Image (tube, rainbow, N blue to C red; front, side):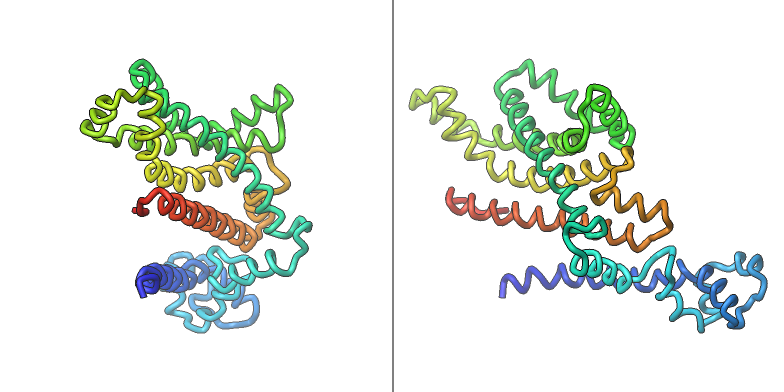
Length: 309
């Protein structure tokens, strides 16, 4: 019953989004559909295409209600309908061999491999920086401001520079994309771990001192266990950021594989369904990664006698 109660609000939100999306298809595709319908012999008002441009999409659709059903079946729509995106997703995932260049499973693995490598690098770097910041006042004053400043640089401007610089020294393929993923994922880990390592209160720290505990014992027995809930919260943000970084890393190189490559193909060759399918496949992949981390979090915290937030 509790699980059902937690799922229903999420399903309601999804239903509202799909309903809004479905209604938005009509005004977004109305002009394209009116032009196509007139070429097919239907009577459209106003008759001149130039005059139709003075109408909004919604007004044009209401003036010509016969085109409303046609807006949901455009081959190259401005906004594809939910059933068109679902059909493209099904076709790209279940009807193509996973080794095919048209399979989203194939492209998903290419992006996922860079995401996971970047996430591992970013998480390791973030934890090391957080430990240094907590135990070194110098690092706290010097590194933390730069870590915050680094996140103000637009990744779309930084990604091509990283790709070009690494390519100049002969590093290509998976690693440049992973570096971008690590860049985006390390910051949430730093912030979460710093907060987690500093979460023990003064009484707990004083108690350890009365036991003559060494700094390393204080770290392993108090600070690190206390930081675990904060770490998992950061990891769930970091894995999503790492996936975005991998996709962004595929865009400036004109990559031939990966979700980013599929989005480029869709944009360059006028295939919006391909772009939207890759976009939704990336979102589903991110949701699955977060779900896996959530399961690991619950199991870990349960073994430690804690409860997930």
